[in-house]
Image (cartoon, rainbow, N blue to C red; front, side, top):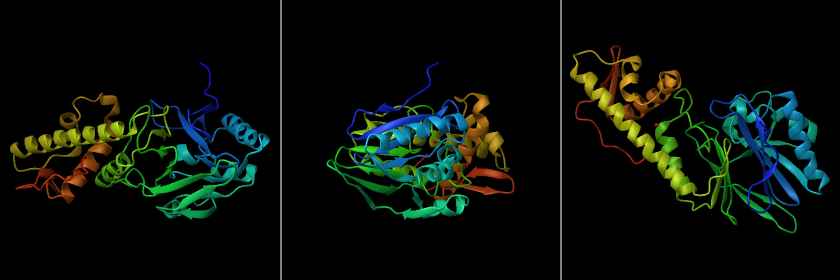
Length: 298
């Protein structure tokens, strides 16, 4: 198999480099992006592997050799397949690392020189200047950021969606309702192309964002149906293990350990909406239920 190399993304002054990372299958690589012409912002210092780091550095240094100045490295969020090279690359290139404030306590070995906030604009100078707007998009992770080149309609979207595989909402740090609300926000941007961390460019991002929302809402209905079936079965509640084969009957059992996390994220959302309740005996459909919100389920 030919190893992925630096490629043009079909838009001006944006390039991608895919490096092998310890990510969740079916993805095997994480995309890094170079935004800007004369001045460049590198997004996703992803790989922890020595051979991949050499290739990544050659790509980054090639930008400088072409007369382009790397001004900083930006992190979309703190997950290992996105930041495995952050400290190393920053040191080798002599540039700062930028991330959201929520990333700092999760990346204690990385010095965050600038804390990026929602609405910040990173201005990259040169004959073809670029203004990159920062979007704080939590839900998958508390510190998740996206980067939007509004002039070209290009959105670097990290792990909000994927070109290969899907996105896990882990209830230990993710929030299903918040995630879906942020997908609605991204869908309304009118971006022309989305550049995910995993997989190729997405040419119809609004359609994909809304498909993700519809899929999660559909899954939520399966979870509700599983709760209803469990509630009809007696006084006791249903455990996650009991609900999983019903709510994820269409999912291969090999993937159930990950599906269990998504199931719990759905249940927590339903509980907050008054549509589910839990006790020592497990989970049940809440009496009377609540109303489904716009940011529902996956």
